Image (cartoon, rainbow, N blue to C red):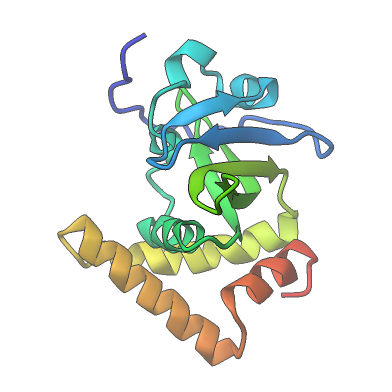
Length: 180
């Protein structure tokens, strides 16, 4: 199958169980090199349609660019990150996840790819992060250039975190544990 044309979101959620993990691996450029069966079932893509394609092909249009900028900056620096993410299925449905993304290193300590494990998010945490993401998306809509939009969105997120006296990682775990 060729790379898809723009998929229109349906507003329907693609379900998966609390004990399931969605797993994918990418090369250093973000192109998928491995996806597990749960990824394929939930996203409704075929393996041959995703391998070699940019992981961003499942980016939901309502997902703030700033979160991906923060994620990419973090993992490229050799650190792990946790984030709530909404992804787009091949048919326009969506699925929310709590993602743990880590760099993969070779024997010399060079980053050779990235690994993501995703699980079903906590409903209370999801409701809270959706409000944060809506604010970030509104900020992004004020900027014509995608890079400027992402940078402005991250700046807004950092301001919110500073006002709350927390870090991004602390906020993610507070949301995950239902403490936020």
